[in-house]
Amino acid sequence: MSQDIPYKIYLKENEIPDKWYNVRADMKNKPAPLLNPGTHEPLKLEELEPIFCTELAKQELDDTTPYFDIPAEIQSFYKMYRPSPVVRAYCLEKALGTPAHIYYKFEGNNTSGSHKLNSAIAQAYYAKQQGLKGVTTETGAGQWGTALSMACAYFGIDCKVFMVKVSYEQKPFRREVMRTYGASITPSPSMETDIGRKINEEFPGTTGSLGCAISEAVETAVKNPGYRYVLGSVLSQVLLHQSVIGLEAKAALDKYGIKPDIIIGCAGGGSNLGGLIAPFAGQMLRGEENYRIIAVEPASCPSLTRGKYIYDFCDTGKVTPLAKMYTLGSGYIPAPNHAGGLRYHGMSTVISQLYDDGYLEATTAKQTEVFEAATKFARTEGILPAPESSHAIKVAIDEAMKCKETGEEKNILFGLTGTGYFDLVAYKNYNDGTMENYLPTDEEIAASLAKCPQV
Ligand SMILES: *Cc1c(COP(=O)(O)O)cnc(C)c1O
Image (cartoon, protein in one colour):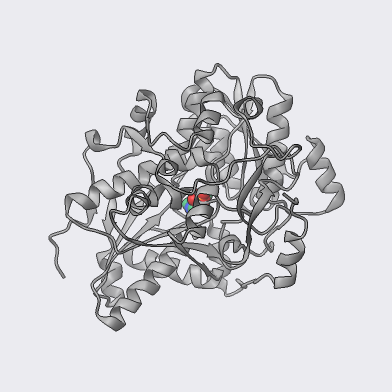
């Protein structure tokens, strides 16, 4: 085994990117515009401003500017936990007996435990700049709420989090981390908003969904002066901020002349994947290089692989703009036994368009397979991975095993988006052998898609 490549490739502090890269600028087929749900006309900045911070709304609508300067205050916050390392998974390779070289970009080295902090700090910064009192948001598994709480505490603004009820109950300790950073947490669907009360009435006892928590957070932002809504995934602005992952990864690999043959990311709303692949996809779009890019989604929430590429609402309560994306229908709620995260019904418009244009592949993983891969990874590489990240681990291992058969020394890069310390109920189910796989039927998906708006 050659050791000339270090276990961990770190950039120097002054090599952290000072610009985010907007992959949309290099896309010939731009992602379809967000539409006003009433008129079906493309949304204008003025229509986004009551919901989003103005600067973030501008980033959302900008599909031509390739680079955005990262403001100095965000750069200095990044220095607290960045650069994140690219790690050569020597021990995993050895355990698998594969000739493949496996690398992962590790984003779990901060208290929130995931990549979400990269965008949280940017969004809190722009809210502060605008003189706002605070922000509202939703959180599913809790990583985004935690990241945003940290970011809001840093800039001294208020943070109201609607947390999907099933996670609120399964992860009481997440809640306490957020409260420690000063956020207020409400289980969703709640009785605090019109949409929450309506969803509770229509689906009594529902364990909630991300889409439904989004509706509550948007309603709360719009009804409270000095508040705006922020979102931790899906939006193009979030992919823009997350490009720091890919820019760092590429710079680190370039130092050692390593070109990844395969790049793998888990896909919930598409933000870590979009961030990781950004500079690589940019090269592909400009016709400079080719990579095999694989998005991995849960078999129980398969938007790219089994959804449709159509206009849909971004939330269950149908208060958000319409986005053209691969979707399972905004009313789709994954089975309550689904423990692996990545529960969102849709997909980033950028990832959707790149997928539709053939720049990336998509595949699914069942949750027991995901936890099997997570366990193998924990036992070899030492890090307890988040279930979400473990979707990417699963496919990285599969690809490495294919190399074992063919003898190919491929370079595999995957995104290790976070740690799994708050997912121990899911690990317990797996360890107890009580974890089950649930695959939605075609009829269920078709019934959910039938309720999408006609555009
Ligand atoms: C939120 C999250 C994801 C999925 O979100 P994307 O927007 O698809 O990246 C993946 N991994 C971790 C650890 C997360 O917290």
